[in-house]
Amino acid sequence: MDIVVCVKRVPLTEEVDLVIDAQKKGVKKDQLAFVLNDWDNYAIEEAILLKEKHGGTVTAITVGNEDDEEVLRRCLAMGADRAIRVEAGDMSRFDSFGIVKILSQVVKDLPYDLVFTGVLADDDSYGMVGMMMAEELNLNHSSMVTAIELEDGKVRTTSELEGGLGEVSVVDLPALITIQTGINEPRYVSILGIRKAAKKELKVMDLAELGVSDGELAPRAIIEEVYLPPETEGAQILTGDPDKIAGDLVEILTKKGVME
Image 1 (tube, rainbow, N blue to C red):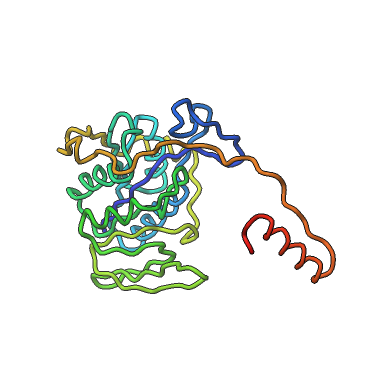
Image 2: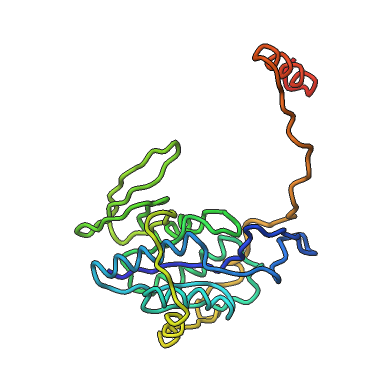
């Protein structure tokens, strides 16, 4: 069972006051710590669990600069067999479509039965790379997956749906699956484990090697401006008995033009 996992290094933004950059195209990241994207952490763990149970290999891939090798080393320390980084220069020139093109060009030449991505990334929350890769690679797919069982030439997945519902699907291999958090409990990785992982293969590919033109990588979506939500007044608390609260609410909505 050969599994390819696409991973991403993202800024840690919890409990941090974000500042918009001078170009108003994103947030300033120079003072932020970076970590393995949470969804991808579950994806690499699930791949390793399947390898431990059924045999095979796990390959982790990322697109980025040398600093992004940090997350690949973590994947290797968790149990991945090899890692690939695509050096793509200025990452701000790519949208999700461009990243899909790059990842797909790498994956298509690798041996795989399954391709895993996280459901989405902490930094942009777009949640589209996995499904677009499935289309680009012409793969069967299942999304928002919270459980996986391998069968003869197939994979049975449980997906999380709205309203607390679940959906069980049987998908022919090869297939692409987007992994939801909570599918497992990612293992702890020690500093010693990361040091040992330095001996494992980490291949660096140049974008030119993939044979993808600038036109194919041109963004389909352009960010015009990123801004912080405007500050608003605090909530108004209505008090009194239900009849009074209902009357006050109607009056407020009427004044605001919501009701006539």
